[in-house]
Image (cartoon, rainbow, N blue to C red; front, top):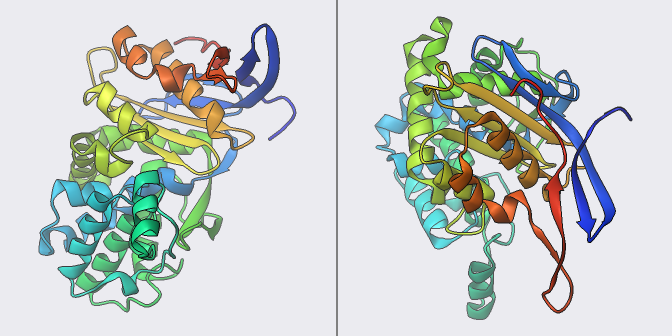
Length: 346
């Protein structure tokens, strides 16, 4: 990013501004009309986990989800960056088992569960954390089952040239209105991540939330997108965790108005479903320059409030993310993290 990137969020201790988080925000309709923008809409960012809903599309369009009787709960976890709680690991394990697979088939790598209580339980009982605890294990399970259903080799299902990954690239490119020759890198879970202009990411989410807005998607992708959005909205605890996760709490607070997904290095995608205020729906993409999650919550909630997507009560439910407190060692509030931008035309 250039030095001209606007400040979105400030960290204040009393009257003192201690830190600033800069970034960019872009809001578009499914037909690519720009609603409002702050910063560079052409800013290229890594997609990271924001595109998990799109990575789940071939799981459905291939017929794998139906063959293996995936429930909405299981479709939601295929789109998740989960906490590694038992509800997550058990769901992923059950999904794999239906295809005759177990945890050893995953290639996402193992990491300690994000959920503090689950991690403590593993340590207390002397049990190791496994690949099932990886926040991306649901996504990888969906990819594996897609490969099994299509009769493809599963050892390299995560490699960019594997047919499953090519199907993902093709589907995402259609939603984002991009060519399929995307610049690719390796994500934390070993699957591909892509370099995408922020505007294209917003457009993809606008169409995810309203897939019928684009005739060229076809019935398969339109239906798959609708199933994914419905599954994520109905099962927010599977997308993130049972408590303390931004995606989950935003899905809960918005009561079916939107679908959202966080990505590493503070990139965020939101699809606003069609409503009286936004008949065609909206797509929103936000990137915090320094990659700090500290600036992301305030920027996202402020954006949704400015657009009128969230009302006052819904914003209040998200207060811990909108204006997080800065506290001293005695637990006394001495400042806050707050958004300092205005969206023109919103």
